[in-house]
Image (tube, rainbow, N blue to C red; front, side, top):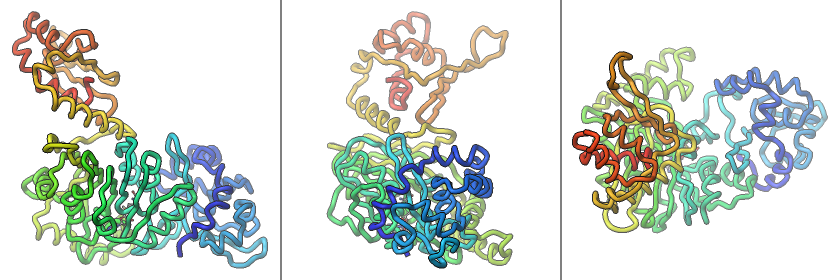
Length: 494
Ligand SMILES: C[S@@+](CC[C@H](N)C(=O)[O-])C[C@H]1O[C@@H](n2cnc3c(N)ncnc32)[C@H](O)[C@@H]1O
């Protein structure tokens, strides 16, 4: 059963004051931190102690899997009412008397950005049902959803496609900066949840059922976002619609990278998350292979954020599927073996995880092919940094070295310099120029490059600074231009 969008207006009135801040204030820091560890008990105890406060009741019913009484639900949902909520597929009641028990049929919780407040309905998770997830489980907002939302470039755009929309969270984000949003999914249930969430948000989405690009054949977009079902699942391991694309290995991500160019308008961008198999040739070879098969030549910026060896990967995703030794050693071992046999047969040593940005050039040929491994903390949201980096790339691409020499650059406000060396040595052994925002990059600089960055206050041109450095005895100052270009493109210099 999925919730009916008809319930949305009345439900909206009832949840209007149910915000994350209100919940945090109610349950306190201990419970908030425990929720981050997927432990519900401290939050349940705190919410129960708040008695008949509507925020406490909504949280207990829809987010914490608690059973309430009919009278309590009537208090939590005064506009929709107990009958309305039951008729719309939100709750199940054992009877109509005040004391009869009521439980939620779905998970519902506030989801907020700096500028918008929504509520996301999805299927209930394992922590409240204490049962293995169904194959057609519809996911709520997870870590990968937040990552994609954070990296998405939120410039005003025309048409957006959210491929694999699930409960619709990326589509809701896109609605804040797009003229129209199409959300697609193979799962009818997921689309029903997305329709409900859109109605609750008062947002119009064009939701379509179908696999990959089938539902949008012949159409083009300015932005495509996708948190695709990228989990690699061999035959013999448990599979879920929300995380397994149904293609062998990392085929779904490869297929998207090779085909998304065909639905992009000139200048259009696709941003997705992905897993990729790493064989002896290294991860860049795998991703480059996909990029090279795109019939539409694309700019590409791919960042690998992490990788796991084949055994670690199997363990992580078996655990995520609820397949753990404590629940049955034989079943766990069999599924684990299925993973490793599949990986070994295909020569997969590790699996990489990261983000992929593709851009169809507005005109001409691609100018960007950047594949890099960047781990560690990154800015949230990252989208503005990506917008600035692409703009810097395009400006640099149109500047020859002579033009660059007559440009004035300014060091970005988040850049710091760290100098390392023995206390008794006059000169530093090395200098790190570090970025506070963006990808949090750190660049090892020699005294020439460090001196250059230190002089970029927007007063002197690049050529004047390099000239001054030469006069001060810095050798080969003019050879710093490639490093300067890199610092501009990566956001150290503007
Ligand atoms: C990881 S979930 C992402 C949900 C949501 N977009 C988010 O960011 O949280 C992947 C979604 O892709 C859908 N999906 C699976 N296979 C698909 C396919 N071949 N084509 C389109 N969507 C698919 C799943 O049903 C699921 O809703």
